[in-house]
Length: 268
Image 1 (cartoon, rainbow, N blue to C red):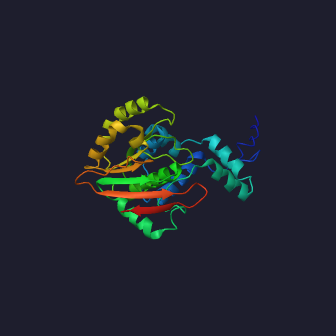
Image 2: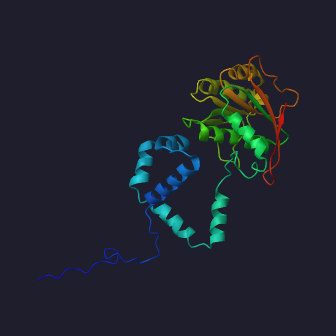
């Protein structure tokens, strides 16, 4: 009678080396659950696919079946770091998420209440000016985040940003242009993307650097503010739009830097 070969360590359930116990898809499920709680609505696989440029079928596989040993390896390494080092590493790898609730803005509750009311405006023109390109882009991005969170359908924004997102999490739904393009190329890109921006289902349009970067598009921008809420960030100098008849106009001025709190003024 042949004796059965003894079980290998793996077959016997014995760990032969340090391992992370949770499979990759369970890590992703947990992370998505936390994202849903933070956003206040269910972030669907379709929306995630749109955000990251991935097919829904790929994400479905990741969230239901895939062990993803690379993800297990990553978390196995992370849990071997002291807590302070682990938190510092994660923080160093993540960009800043601009929100109206962010600590850099939260010190001005009355201003934030006013900004929240602006986020829900269906049409009009909101201007964001100020000496700091970073501060202007942060506030513009916070508008976009606030709209998607509080919109009944949680629609993404649309828009055009004439700069890299840099240290900030990019806006879902917006187009980004390289910062070093010459004016002729910027105008060509704006004209090329404008039909998608103008015809998007969302009522909020965010434009950063477009007013100064594509002066020939200014009439179209003002016209669009009659049917959508256009939030315009720029270093206006002497070219600040005066609005058009029948358009709600709000002027905001923001200052600050990544290392300091942002100061927002509502200009009448």
